[in-house]
Structure formats: C-alpha cells, structure tokens
Length: 360
Image (cartoon, rainbow, N blue to C red; front, side, top):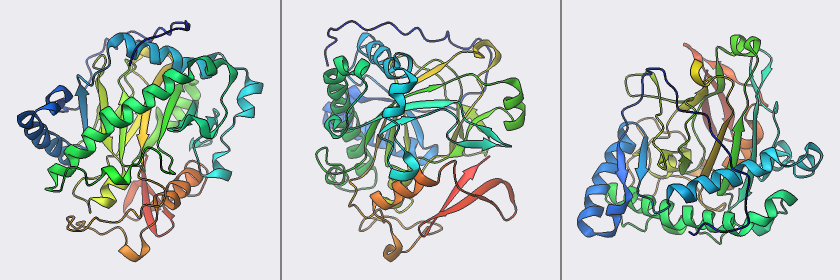
C-alpha cells in the first residue's frame, strides 16, 4: 500500500494507560518469516500453539508501515466524526431486518445489562465496496479503503489461513477456496468507536461495555490501538487485558473456524470493559477486518477434522455461513437470552440449531 492524497484530518488517539495491569501472555507472530520454507514451518508451529492455547495472538511485520496504519485510522474517524446524524441515518444498516452489518450501527442499539444500552457506533463495509453507497465525506478515500481491504484479505488473512491449515496437518490451501474475495459473502471492514458512558451506566453494567462473546466468522483481525479495554478469558479462567503493540495486529478465532476445524481451534471468548482511570473519558477508535467463509459454505467439520469434545450440532443441522451470521447479527443485543443452568454468568440463546453462549 502507498499513502496518498487527499489530505484527511489527523486523529489523535489517547495516550497509553499508565496503570500496572494484568495482561494476557500472547504469542507474537512475525509474518515476515512466512516467505521462506523454514520460516513457514516455524510459524506453523507457533500459530498452531497460540490458537489452541489462548485463541489470540499478535502479528508484527505484516507489511504496512506505521505511517500507513496511522492514515487508515485517520480515515476510519471520518464516517464517525465528520458525517451528520441525518446522513448517518440514510446509511443505517438496519441489522435486525437485514442480518448484515453493512452500513452504520448507531449508538444505543444493543441492550448491555440492567436497562443500559451501548455507546458503540460503527460503520461497516463489505469487502466489495461497490455493493453499497457510502457517505459523502468518505468517498474521497474509498480507493485507499478498497486497497486496504484487499491487503487485509490477501496479505494477512490468506497467510494466516494457510498456517492454520498446516497446523491441522492439512494442505495449506484448505481454507482459501472457502474465503473467495469475489464470492458472495459478508467479510467486512469495520471502523468503530466506543464513547464514554455515565458513572450510573458503569455501575449498572459492572463496567462491562460489550459482554463476553465469541465472534461468528473464521478469523478476526484487529489493528492494535492504545485504549486498554479488550479482555479475553485465559485458560485458567481469568479475564486478562490485551496489550497494545504499536502497528501490530491482534488475531483471534471465531465460531466458523471452530466449526470447520471440528473444535481443533476454538472460538475465543472476549469482552470490552471500561478503560482504566488514566484513559477514562477517552474515545476508543478501532479498525477491524472480520473474515467469514462465503455465504454458501456449510460450516461443519471438514473431512478428517478432529471431532469436538462436545459436539455443537450434527452435520445435517450445520448452518451455512449466511444462515449463521444472519441469525447472530439479528439476535445479538436485541433478543432474549436465558441463564445457563448452574452458570450464573453465562447466558444462552439458540441460533437455528446452534447453542450460542454469552458471558456477562
């Protein structure tokens, strides 16, 4: 990628947290090693171990400079900060009706807990930017955004999918035909901002901004940013923070990868909570690339995949990616959940014939 005109207002993120916090010990994957046979073999073992151990890891040396990354964060702020509420309404994604994240998700759309609704806004773009129109303020940057999407897909996602396949003892291209760039599907880029909440809302939700959940796609790519709020459940059952590494990526597995691998890789439970005191009051701007198999892919275990310790559904009941993502999007934050027997902090709901859990 190359940094290019036109100019864009610079987004200044919050300074890093000054507190001493408990961070998850996550592997750091150097993607520059992917280009050699020896490097690929080493990365295969590292990614396999990281994904099976914690389901989260960092990626460095992905090929984009800090300057290019900073510019994409500048662009990410445009549809959130420089578009009027009236125009945003025209591009409302209407997720409950469409089962798609394309367009805006407005603030206060999801119920968090005890009557408190979220303060999260995001603008989502399908990997094919031509599928929808976009706000006027974003249009001068769409060619760069499309280039960035392609870079995420071919230069980051595909190498990771190859390493994940090799880690299962499969041909490295096993997952690639299931993630066609030009096929019908909902792989998308997200620009997202978390806004500060009132102290009353923090108390009612016990400082939880987004409940513990798993992503529903295959691989999630988060471009690291400094506001410390993302946590994951570690193997010992404790919530720990994900640290910020400048110009690094944070990678995690989603449900579709768990389903297709037969549980060899497990979707990772994570949540977002109120930042520590040194960052409270700051906005949290994020850039994400959420990869999903093509809409028509049945997301059941691949041939010879390891079986789940506790099978989630039969092959006959396996949803397509389209069915599953529509169900998850429509239901999340807007449909009834119930407490799981014996688990006070676990809530469940059925998406088709798949039991989905949320961790409060």
